[in-house]
Every structure is written in C-alpha cells, then in structure tokens.
Length: 108
Image (cartoon, one colour):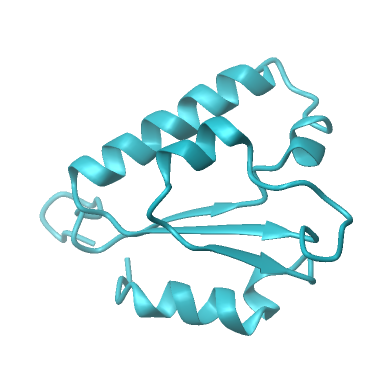
C-alpha cells in the first residue's frame, strides 16, 4: 500500500476472479443484475490488462460435472488465462489456486 496515498498501486495487486459461473449468477439476489455484474467484471478485466495486473481465474466443480464453466463473455476476455477448477468451495484450500495467487508475487 502506498503510504503517501493510502491506496494500493497496480504493481501491488492482482485481480482474483472466483466462481463467475452460470450457477452462481442464478443465485444473485441483488439490485445489481447478473448482466450488470458481468459487465462490471469485464471492465475490471480490461482495466487489469491496461495496468498489467495479473489475473487468476477459478471455477468450482466443472471437472466433477456439478457446475458449468466461467460465463463465456468473461472467459472470452481471459483467453490467455488458465482456469483453475477446484473441488472445494474454499478457494484458498485448493493447492493449485493458492499457488497461482502466490505466483503473481503481489502482496497488496
């Protein structure tokens, strides 16, 4: 965190996207619609790319056949990012996810 401004810089952070899947979007109970969430996430992805912020993308239960993949509109923005599919709801418990986050080297 920048001591002078009290905010993180692009060099200190990563964008971590967890479970942006159809099944999760169907459960959204908010004034913000799933389409608005999708639009906002795609904006964050584009901003992250513009500032060279690393992105980690994770799903849950795709390989097990329980859930579908990341929404296509979001996945299309991240064609160069490997999807880490977990079997656990707690992303941090998944070794591959945790390693991907640590590999970013960001400690904001």
